[in-house]
Length: 486
Ligand code: HEM
Image 1 (cartoon, rainbow, N blue to C red):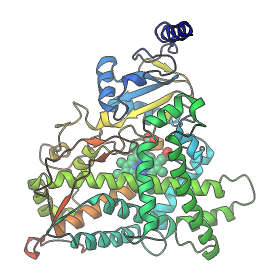
Image 2 (image 1 turned 120 degrees about the vertical axis):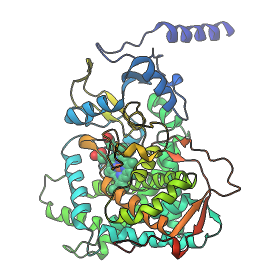
Image 3 (image 1 turned 90 degrees about the horizontal axis):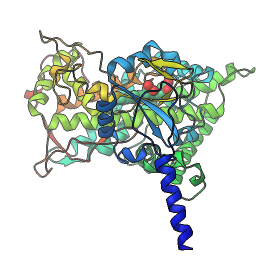
């Protein structure tokens, strides 16, 4: 018996060390993969960004690694990311179908939909609806400002003290997207939204975590009751909520008089009911889930990172406060953008796949290759930024102190899959920060310990929990010139 176990282990060891996984011909170089596991043991299970940086130094800006038995190509730095996503946009616009998130969304909606007519129809629909609709009688700006006033009410109750901003910013970002797509916002103590937000926060971390990797690379594990089942459970619960909202809307809507994006979608189904259309109930639920998920964690984590940098850089905060009067007249603020760069919210973008055989530099990539645009590498690339690794508004100012947006500022990615919510997110970040900085001074609480700027890795990265010290500014401190009251 012992002999057979030893033999089995020897066999497994031989398999690992002598079977060579062969890269396709003329494929980008990379570390040698093991059978079944690929290069997973060379990547930190909790945060692989440093390991990717090391591989880039060793193999160059285009390298490959194996996620299980599947090769993936990692693109680093502005030049190759732009060549793939912009110059060769159509060749690189696919999405993987084998990942856990692909199985959750089943290729529906926008984010995980493959490049094709359904993705195109839904992307166009969502973009034009969010843009033109201005949403009903109320503009997007009005909806955001309404939410900002609720944030202020919450902060008011902590003035002189401190509070944990995590839930507040998540609730606010989620309410803004809910107001646009479902026409409703929740009170901050409503158990429905609190539960949804908690599920969402866990979902975005777990859906790309170590268990999700195991799910992807060892399919026989999938039916087992392992922790990745929780991700499916959380997803189903969020989906259930959306379905309830859809049912309510169907009963209360007046056709042709849309109140929100959901009503617009129902009108669209009516218009295209005569067949051949990609608009249907299942796609609608996935689209709403996409927008809810993609629009909450991202904006909220960016805001929380921004606040952390502001609290610990009082001189920058004071300067922003002084300059807000000018900002309101239209002058873009370099420090807002550099905080956004440092928050590095979606470090590895959403993974792409190649839609046809293609190339990058002198390498050949077969159709269906997974492509990982390392946006983090672009946002901190030496040679593209004056201070690539530190928060410094100078990164966005030219020699004469004017605002410039470097080409390497790609937090929303680029090309045909570029973030659909960029306009909304920018407006949210701007209106929230400007309003809050006018009214409050934010300080690092005395008992807050040493600030830790390292980010918690995930599909979206977030800052470590911290407390926000809130101080009301006196009326004398308010900027005297402003073109618009918020
Ligand atoms: C600071 C906030 C945000 C950041 C940094 C961000 C970043 C990104 C990134 C990097 C991608 C992947 C692009 C690619 O595949 O190359 C993406 C996709 C997407 N984002 Fe955002 N996003 C933000 C806010 C939002 C908001 C508010 C919405 C909601 C309207 C949204 C909706 C989407 C959608 C639907 C996609 C998928 C686009 C497609 O596959 O065609 N995002 N975002």
